[in-house]
Amino acid sequence: MTERNRRSDNFIMQAGILAAAGIISRIIGLLYRSPLTEVIGEVGMGYYQAAYSFYSIVLLISSYSIPAAISKVIAEKLGRREYRNAHRVFLCAMGYVLVVGLVASLFLYFGAGLFVKPEAIGVLRVFAPTIFIYGILGVLRGYFQAHRTMVQTSCSQVLEQIANAVISILAAYLLIKSAMGTMEIPVDEAGQVTRASYGAMGSALGTGAGVLVALLFMAGIYALNRGVIHRRIARDKHQEVDSYGDILRTITAVVTPFILSTAVYNLSTSLNTALYTKVFPAIKELDSMTIDYTWGIFSGLALTISNIPIAFSSAMASAMLPSVAQTVASEHSEELQGKISTAVKTIMIISIPCAVGLFVLAKPLTFLLFPRPDEVVTLAGRLLMALALSVIFYALSTLSNTVLQGLGRVNVPIINAGVALVVQTVVALVLLVFTNVDIYAIAIANVVYSGIMCALNQWSLYKAIGYKQEWMRSFLLPALAAVFMGGSAYVVYEILFLLTSSMRISVIPAVLVAVAVYFVALIKLRGLTEEEMRKIPKGHVLVKLAKKCRLL
Image (cartoon, rainbow, N blue to C red):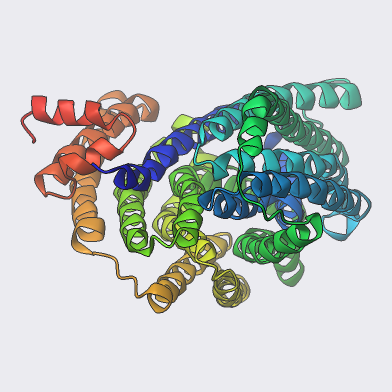
């Protein structure tokens, strides 16, 4: 394999590293959600999720897109070996986020009452300082991602989630204990609201603590590499040095479309929160406690589980952005379509079986991760089934979003997301007002939004570079293998459940059988070759296993 091909395939390996960290982080997040919900309750989780959705919007606008945008700008400089200018971009970006992050934090703190109901204002204010910290963390992550290494970001994500889990539970417990004097749930509604609010504030404090721990880790990594960075700058032979004014204009020009695209892309969650928790109960004259309870189940359980498989596509997108930017900057355009095709196929091989698995084993998987009462698990499982298809759509649209941004078509994802947002809002409103589907309206709207985004982005890629994805081995064969997998998992689960009457005992063997059946079916259908397996992290182990089982 040539050096260029090794570089071309490297983003798959880096995406695998980042995806592994993302999945580990999400598993940690799931593991601590159950004890956290035990501490703060479904109502407290509803307050937390409502505040978190608006915190996310301000974070998206101010800081969340910084790693991707900065990695693109720096990667372009590195592609031309302009090491001095690359580091000047890093310094200028740091100044940018210090100012923007401070303004955003103050805005969220003092304007909390504009976004959430009174019970969740304190929760949103606890979130506010995290935005300032995250901006600095984002620049450090983007700097290392631009060098096509995701190890630092991956480690920081795992540390962030561990700190988040520990501090969230501990802070929620201590705040409830100090405010109420006991962990018992009060019988009066006012007491329940107070308890839930303090518990949600403790959970929000954990989020900020996790980001701070990740920042300290990334700052330490940068300090360790500072000597190497400055030696490389000293060897830079380029005479032209960009002024900080020019760099700031470049950053603003790149960051602004990234921010708008990411904000609109993720605005559906906050909009759906407002539709269900504010508009819906006002129109139907429903009890707000019941609404908060149901929303906590949807956003805290079903939506959380459905987001786990999307971690891999997000990692692939993060790993691919600097690769696309450097390919465009170095004018190696012949590599581009191959990279996109490889990335799409890799994502589909993982996302399609995940979607099928979530649909078939929705309720037992929910109970395994969140051992809540039966009525909670049943509702969450049904919502998860409704959301399953969105896993595939979100995975593909997340990647295509990033590719379009890397190609310089930064405004296209904004337009596509805007169109999808309008359609999903109309769908959600019609279903909420004129039908009795209740919270399922939001799940359906979620699928509609992700599906429209997926279709529009694919069409935009075709118009931009004439890109066409190969369908048979990227979509149809993984889907066929996933059907065999889903059927096997369902049969194994039902048989074991009849014998044991335990969802927890029955679902784990069913998942293991599902993984084995999918692996065998995909290879036998020739949906995955030996060469493709070797590109995956630890792929040589899979190849060795397949040959030992005489599948290859």
